[in-house]
Structures are given as structure tokens and as C-alpha cells.
Image (cartoon, rainbow, N blue to C red; front, side, top):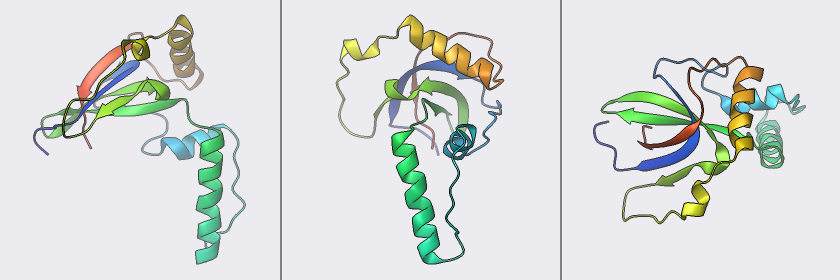
Length: 139
């Protein structure tokens, strides 16, 4: 992939590039399962698939996952991850600079506590507490 011209900043907990989260590659599916969501639509037909994905999307909009996995770039490889509070993630894609309001970069004690309790509840082992991270995007 080479150089990444995209930047991201977020409040979260950093993890090494070889860390395995309990959801593998499917955070949204995992979150729906954790919350007990059941989708009754059959995916055997085109109409069933449309209804299935519509139901998933509607549920996701009403019950957003509170965290997001940020993948950081290290040359041609993922350099690590940040398990971030979803509402703190700011990305700047290719192009000119993007302004960030300093007030948007405040994290409360509740934010810190939430991330630590989330990790504990889902048995995600971490060696450090939450903080702000600036990284280049890998994806």
C-alpha cells in the first residue's frame, strides 16, 4: 500500500498489530449478537436478502456500536489498532487540511471508565488506559 495520505484521530486504547479482538473481522455482526438481535428474514431469495440487510441496517442505526476499531498504517502493513469511542473518531482523507475544534477533543472520566469497563466485560486484555491517538489510515 505504501504511503497513506489520510489521517485519523480518536480517543481509545491502543493494541498491537497482532492483537485478536473477540469479533474477528465483523464488529457489527458481533455487536448485534451481543445485544441479542435476531433477524428473522431468510436470505435464500433476493427479496429475503433485501429484507435481511434492511433489518440489519435499521437495527444498526437505532443501536450503534459504541466503539470502532481504528486500523493504523505502518508502511505496507497494519501497524496496530485503536479501540476507539465511535463519536471521537475524526478522519481527514486525501486533500486539504480539515479543521478540528479543540472542544471536540475532550474526553471525560466517564469516557475513560466506559472503555475500560467495555474491555473488561468482553474480556479484552489491555496493558494501558485510554488516550488520544493520531495515526495514518490503513485500509
